[in-house]
Image (cartoon, rainbow, N blue to C red; front, side, top):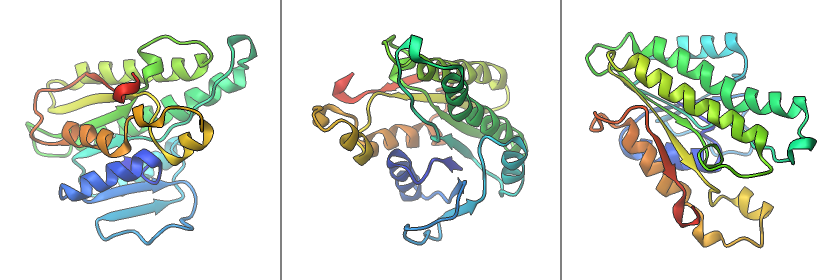
Length: 223
């Protein structure tokens, strides 16, 4: 299961997982348009609001048995601290923390149905801004720092159940959207989506049996 699977990073993650033999389930809030038809190994469910508790619960309940749940959906907002409204803070918490919280909870419920002792993998997305302090992104940084703690507390809680929980922490990712937003930046130092996707693919692999509770920097040379 991959949230944000239609985004710049999400598409690369889905490609990497499909190449490894996985069938990927992608929840999507709106109807699919302007996209190529899903492959047999990529199954899209529309009408899923990841910030809605009932919608997320119903979505996971309707899935077949799952091995991994990868939570890439999120958003970014930047502003000086004194210009950061409560609405901005709550919006960042909703889009980054609430979505990960609900997906983690329902993924765990689903994975507990798998035969043990190795039951599954969860990967969240943090950010460099939640590991290395910087100005101008307080709401975003706080929301991603909360994702860090969510990841590590779940890893501790689930360590006896065979469910590993980790997070990747990107800096700026080399996507078309980011290039358009920062045309003067040195793009060749940004981490490529395909390279980050390989890190995710390893974390969800059954071969990785020792990593849980990690916050893994995937900055590229920009970090």
